[in-house]
Amino acid sequence: QVQLVESGGGLVQPGESLTLSCVASGFDFASYRMSWARQAPGKEVEWVSSFAQGYAPTTYFDGAKGRFTTFKDNLINTLYLRMEDLTPEDTAVYYCQVTIQGQLRRGPGTQVTVAS
Image (cartoon, rainbow, N blue to C red; front, top):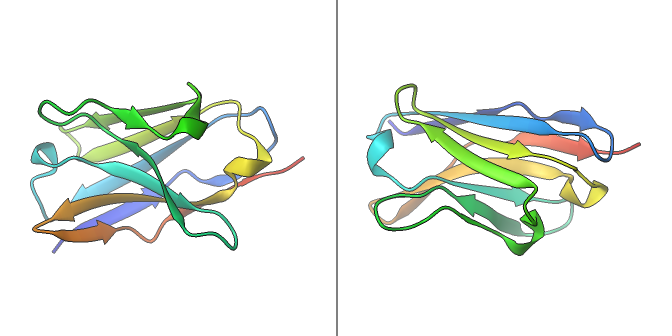
């Protein structure tokens, strides 16, 4: 059974940093392109980043502006999102996600709140 569990969210002040984690199980983690997405209050889910897989490079949404870094540890089935210089506009529930056999799977998410 595919499981994705995010952690690392919290309340931070503008300009601070956070690193989110996503532990995966139930599938061959090393073989799939893993991604991060987020949902801000009152808005739709927005893609944030996808980690390199095969010939596809790591990519980020425009709002990352060099502040976000995605990395992956296949030995412990964990995906990370390092976020720096956070702003209130980064406030959202952050999800890790993967598409397996055409079906999008997403974890329950972790809340990130940026406020002074």
